[in-house]
Length: 354
Ligand code: NAD
Image 1 (cartoon, rainbow, N blue to C red):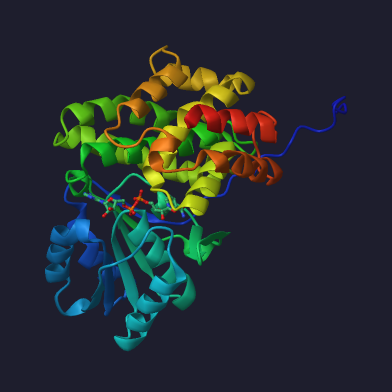
Image 2 (image 1 turned 135 degrees about the vertical axis):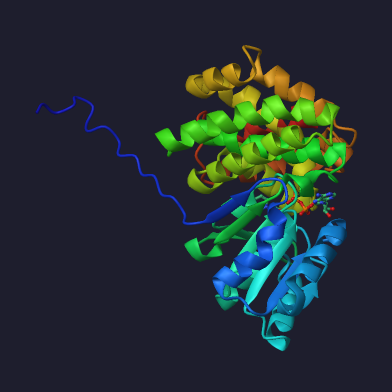
């Protein structure tokens, strides 16, 4: 054996979280059986108003197993909302929680599970990917803190593409681009592994192929199914690798100005890709294959611009005077990125997104 002149090659670590995943049209009907399997007798059902119809159906299907419902989770898991829901868990002696909805419902179930140890089943209705991660972001007085622990991750995930049929085109588009951001950042992550590369490559290809088809035919079950399964893979990327500049920017802007999660991710992504991809040639090559040889930045920018809501930071309500402060904060916060960032370079990205 000879020593490598530049030292030993880096050791790659890949960790997989245990989770039981049920996926396919109609999968939501497996939830009562999954509760039985987990030994859960008193379910707290957390859902958003947008998921009222499937939540009513699920409540009926749970029958006497339903202990209570909580219908107002909020974005970024405010501690005050968690405290309300915890009181309910206590009052009704809930021994399990089912979240039916987007990342807000899933986040609340994670917050309850990590505080009480009760098992959770996540039934996502957007493409945000939170259900696949051991990460919980919580807010108090407008300040967001994020923690990571294995027991935050739902042990059971039920993906039913039929639950995404009601997503309006704008939310479909921005939520899918939010998922794409997880895959893109996994491709240039310093802790990428052969597994995360494979997941991210397939996720990006699936999202970019399925998204235009779903936007053209929103009720097509197979296209919805591919979009959802690709978003699952993207969520696994978010769980398994350290996110870079894109997520730092979204975190800083979203936390400071209380911005809608998916539209913010969607509008930032092409700008961060334009900045990073010249320094991430392998990611650029994989993304170019995913777009069928087209320029990935142009392809994602075209999708992002087609949103019928705000497509700039200005339109989202971010004050121009705040850009430099955000840039300085993001540049100073330690995060992995393929291209070194400075306050000036981040300001340029934000000016372009503005
Ligand atoms: P969300 O859950 O707030 O949902 C966005 C909007 O879509 C809401 O108005 C909701 O009612 C509506 N909606 C959801 N599903 C629908 C459906 N099928 N049909 C019609 N309307 C529907 O937002 P989100 O983008 O899903 O998730 C964002 C939240 O998740 C943020 O709080 C974010 O911080 C968190 N998140 C956490 C992680 C993590 O790993 N911890 C990952 C991604 C997102």
